[in-house]
Image 1: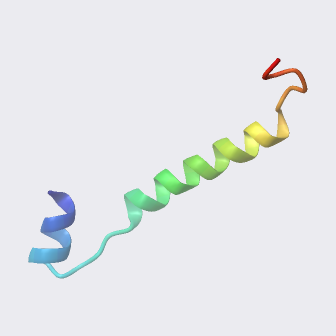
Image 2: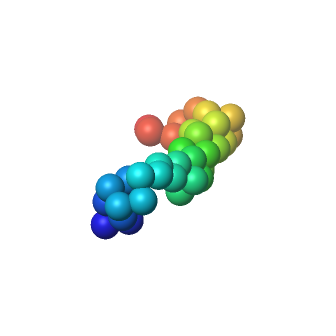
Image 3: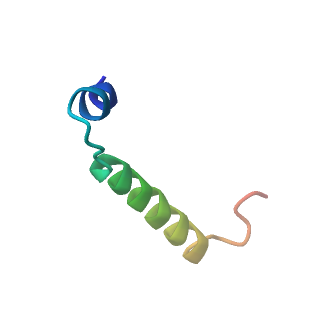
Length: 42
């Protein structure tokens, strides 16, 4: 609904929340790759 309001009604695109979600996912992936244990899936 927010996407419809911003893009359809106001004609503006807001990528702020999308950027924050992407930043969190990227940070989680980097932390997982850095601190992964060798016998994690054993």
